[in-house]
Length: 457
Image (cartoon, rainbow, N blue to C red; front, side):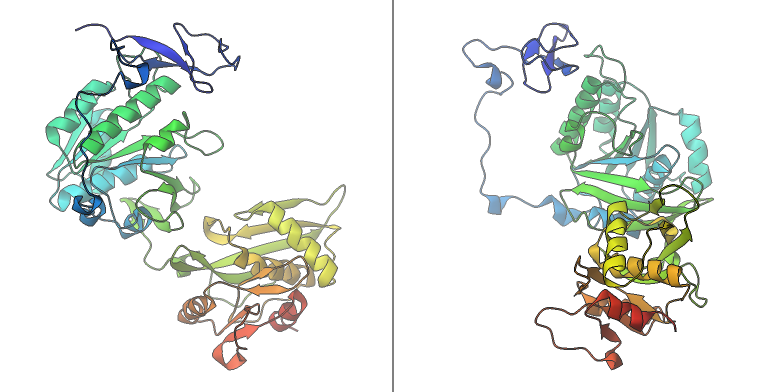
């Protein structure tokens, strides 16, 4: 078999170089040359067409093509299906990222076992652990089931041969940074190796009915390690988030060609693996006791799901230097803006106070409808007056101090009533009729009106 020729391509300008160099000889960019398998040059054909096969590409009317999404495969865990958009799509490739020890391997081994238990075969390719280590984890989570095959290898060709020989409904590769291609000389995890491994696995997935799930390492910033092209090669990028010492795990989609990226899955780490949370709203509420100063509840919309979330705030007189602002689960700049609005339009000066804001349960909130709950929690802590019992807040706070209604306020109110709350305070909607207090939806025009209707006397 003839040796495979490689070249080095610049990731910025696309120029080729016969050997690696720190600086691209064409565009002078630094550290952009990546080892790549060279396409064979065909006489009389331009280099861009060197990989083209003889004959023209098959052309079919779009109406005659069957949608792959019509035959989704259930993962066996409802929260995972929610984030994926309804389950695994045959012929797709998924990238799962997360911090070390967060539970990526455990979750994917569970999913492979669930698929096998449902009648489909599954393959787990491990390149980081030995086969006996994976077997030990499978015993702890009840994953030793017929139809689940295991292969331990770090060689790409061996992994591809295993996938093609078994033709599983779901194939897990753990991880993409530890599989290496013998055609490239770079070490495992290098840019060229990661891109080559992912592209070869994507070709196998697209050519058949196998859904391939890749485990990806993350950087210290929390993003998937490796080239950005890795995320472009896959159909979905899923992140498993949470605190290692806590039991809550959140599943989010940063990219999903077959569903929404707004959905969030809530899982709980237990002794026998990850389990879905039955009632996520009650799970994120700290307690059902009387509200305390510095606490406010909002109903946030994560995709199509309303979640009751508790916002906690603490203000304390700054002892020296500049006051500190620390947030967890909320954008710090958003909190700084609300502090300024409270000072200007509600007469609440937090200039000399340290401010700490936290979202209970480890959830992160990005929607503007949480503004009113954050501002109310800050005011409650400063005035030492708790929020009235049975009240939830949802509305966007403008720089002028005026409020905007929360999107789908009626749906938020229905979820609040299900959890035992009797009223939702929000802003006025443009063109909507006035709501009465009897309906449970209370409209406040400004932040000052909302605080007067919310805080205890």
